[in-house]
Image 1 (cartoon, helix red, strand yellow):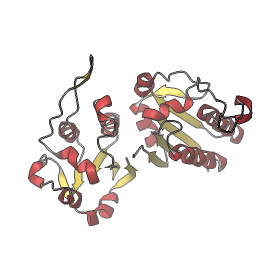
Image 2 (cartoon, rainbow over the protein chains, first blue to last red):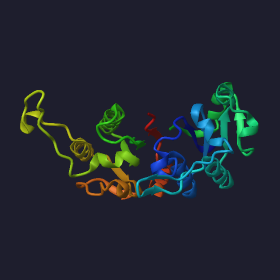
Image 3 (cartoon, chains in turn blue, yellow):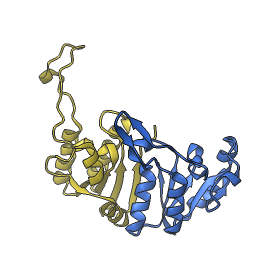
Image 4 (cartoon, helix red, strand yellow):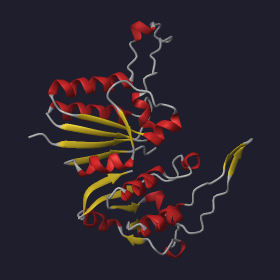
Length: 127
Length: 136
C-alpha cells in the first residue's frame, strides 16, 4: 500500500501569485518527509501534463512575477522523486488533448479504473 | 480507546462554508473523545490571526457589541478549551511559509508554527486523514 493518492481537481488556482500549484508543492514537500504520495490529474488539471506549456513572465507596473510556473516540469520532478502521476484519459479526450501532447512520463487511466486504483492507498485526498 | 484524526484546511476565513464544516467536524470528534490534528495551509493560516476584529452592522443598525460578530480565532480558541475539558489533544499547526506570505503570524495560545514535515508526521500518527482543499 502507498500512503496517499492526491486527486488534483483544481488547476491554475492562484498559480501566478504563488509561482507554484500549492497542492503539488505540498505533495512534493511531504514526499521529502517520507510520505509516498502519488497524483491523479482529473478534469482541467489534465492540462498540467501538456508539454508545450510556456507561460510568460508578468508585470503590473514595476511589480513583476518573474517565474511563472511550468507544471509539466513540476510533474517530471515529482516523478523523478518517485511519485506516480496518472491522468484520466476520458478528461483529456473531452478537452481535445491527445496523449502525444502530454509528457510521456505520465500514465493514462480511464474513469472506470479509478476505484481499483484507490484500493492501493491508505489515504485518498481530493484537492 | 481514543483515535486521532488529521485534517488539512486550506480556505481563508469568511470565504467558504468549508471552514464551518471543518470546525463542526473537529468539535464532534473532540466530543467523542478523539484527538484532532489540524494543518492550516494557505488561506486557512489566517483563521487564528489574533488581530481579527468584529464590526457593527449598519444594515441591521446593530453596534459592534450587539452584533457579536463571530471571529474564527475565537471559535478555534473554543475548540482548544473543549479539547482541554474532554482531556483530548487538539494540535493546530499553521504552515509557516503561508503565514509569512500573509503576515498572519500572530495568534493566541494554542496554534503553533510548522510545515510539511509536521503534516507528514501527523499523517503517519493518525488513524484517519481528511483534506478540505480550496476547490473554487
